[in-house]
Length: 121
Image (cartoon, rainbow, N blue to C red; front, side, top):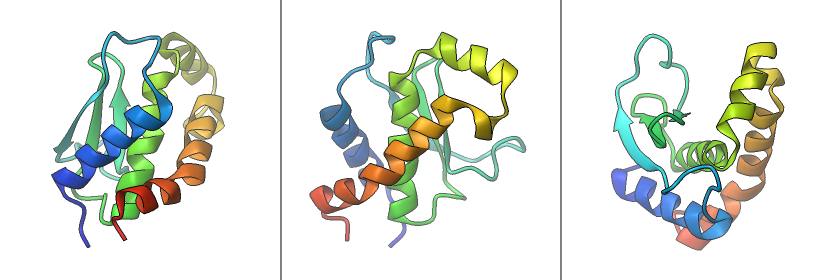
């Protein structure tokens, strides 16, 4: 089953209930699908801390499992200190950044729980 906008909204709501609100933002993130640009065509999604927004790549996020993992991962960035993330990003590669590693660990740990609770399978 190909993910839909309805699935994305439900996963975002699940994240808000499961992980709570960010202490670094005044409000929860918004979410949208968009066509990727040349810099982001390989990724399923990314978080933009300048406008508290999760962007989903409508060409790369092909399964509900990928969608769930992506939103959980990007929601973790919403919860993280954006200044700390930027400091680390200047020194380390994307793969070495401990905040990226932490976000991926949470996504891999929790995506099946989300799928089961939202009955996507």
